[in-house]
Image (cartoon, rainbow, N blue to C red; front, side, top):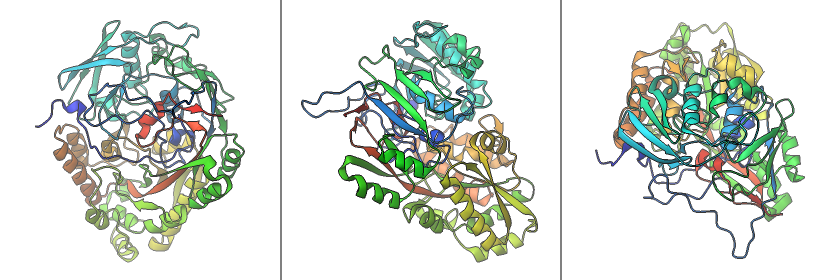
Length: 564
């Protein structure tokens, strides 16, 4: 095996594109947009040059000679949905947003290099694949009672990891529930981590570097997470100031942030705008500084209206629009899932939802080297053949006389549009009877998806993950410590998903991930991918310091500033 240390291997060197964020700079786009966005928005430090060792600080965002960075600006962002709770352990939306702003982390692994970047961690030593030791630097918590600005200690980090592992309402991967054994503070600056089994993706942003699970809390709050129902205290770039019943959040700069001189922004403010038309109007009125665009018509209209006063980022999304049928009972026959998949006209979805700007996607989106080769995609998850689909379904015991539901997230236009098109195709191509059921994010996520309370289909745009392993996690018997959302249970697929995590050779692991996607088709795994969008995000040009192309890592940017 040609590697010095498999934890720090470079997954690939080529630049991977992120999609535009509905929430704008510095926010967890998918969550803030109410799961309606196609991606996350990169706004982080400049890229680490190839060959730079993990933990090497990235270069500061360059400024024009003579330019003075203004540090009194407030970044104004869109909030697309009301949060049921501000507690990061109580919802995916709050967990992601605060993980990128209010809380600090030991490390993060950006997708463009695949090399771990140390944050609070100053060094990470790994004597063997099941143990590693982390040393932390100097940092302080926000100066709010009862923590009162004390120094961050290893005991806080250890308590945070162990607390996150026990949470049932956040979307933790199986790494937290099945791989992590313990995190123990040796002294005030040293934590020993022990794993139950080898996992090649341990340092990824889904696992040990999760923006939710790895958020560092004060030990006192980690032991009583209910404190966060009413207030938030972290050691991140921004302090939590206020909210209005789960909306219109206000954050202010943390003056003792561990990186001196950052963040450049004095504050961030979020405005609840649930409808796209209202968001576009607010952007044009400069009431918000960034807006995700649903299609090229919206893009062209803004460019015509504002010209070079705005910047448009057009990029490949890593968020896959997904149809999730049941995976148990009559749905467990692989021919049922194959028939449903072949009845979906992906090009029509791209044309109607994105005016032709999109790409057919397999389970792992095109941005990753682990995506299926085009020939395999066309023969499996990308195949469209209504006649064969109807014939295949007729050969099963599937009940076509029953009316099935498609559950989607409200409010917002995109999810409803996707659900409507899928329903039309299922009715036309398979003769199914389908009704649409819109649900608010909290109910849809906790009860229908996580709780598996649906009788037909769930539809959604997946999170824009930074590692390919996360996209195939749905084939396992458990997803993040919960029973498989679709009720899907297949011993072979479960074993293959677990096995690829133990493969330390990059080429072999890539081949394994691709083989899993092929077998998912053969075995009728119910997570049906359709397409990824070419996303467009508009930002006012006076918002400086933006960097795209680093995936979710860009959301940790402390160098954004307002030149106005």
